[in-house]
Image (cartoon, rainbow, N blue to C red; front, side, top):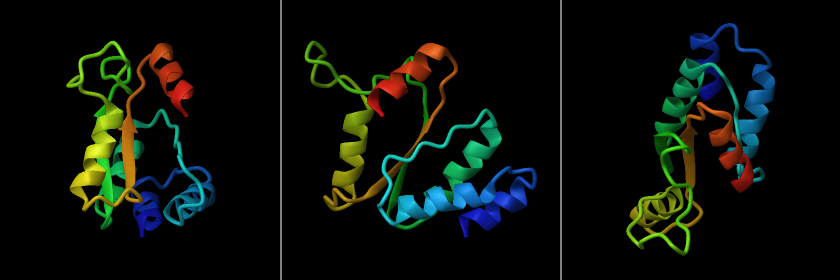
Length: 121
C-alpha cells in the first residue's frame, strides 16, 4: 500500500488521510488530474517512486516546466520535445490504452514555472 510506505518513510506526514483520499479518487478515475503540491522534494520523490511500481501506471520524472515545453505551439517544429507528446507516447507504448494513468513529477523552482502549470491545469 502506497500510504503505508509513505507513512513509514515520512512519519511527520501531515494529513495522511487527505493524501489517501486523493490517491483513492485518482486510482478510481474519479478525480483527474490530481495535483499534489509539496516543498518536500524527498516526499514527492518517494510518492512518485511508489506509484511507479504499480502495474499499468506510467511515470515521467523530473520535468522542469521552465526548461521543458508542456505543449508544442503551432510555431514549433513537429519534433520539438514536449510533455503532451511524451504522455501520448507512453499511452501508445502501453498498447494504445488511452485510459492509462500517467503520473508526472514536476519540479517548479520558480514562480514562472508554477504559473505554467497552473495555466494547463
